[in-house]
Image (cartoon, rainbow, N blue to C red; front, side, top):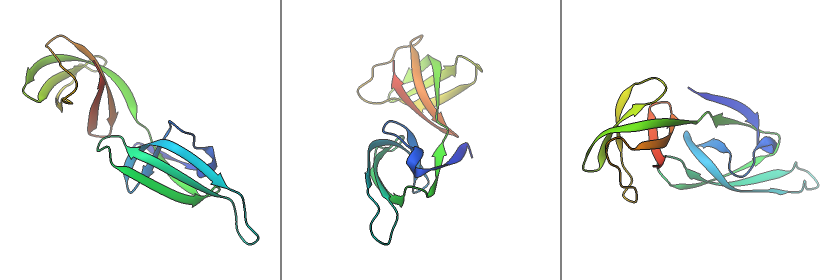
Length: 126
């Protein structure tokens, strides 16, 4: 799996973290001061990168968590068919089919930017 381990205290808003084995983008990050018998805690609210579900995580700041390596890539639309688009990666020239978000209108020869984590892909802008 394309991921690395880091401490919770090194995370920031806008970065990625694995919650429930799903790559998520952090929306908010807050910490609570250590109490009399405990360590400082961090609360993370995040949104799934590929499924858009809201998730939260509460851990001590020195706990280890997995951070996914999400790649931002460039592609070119080869053809469209309803809600699917045949896309060619501009670096490797691999072609694959992707679901097109309803708010994006794609035509053949359009260049797009997409996120990829393992076999999951999502169009971010055209």
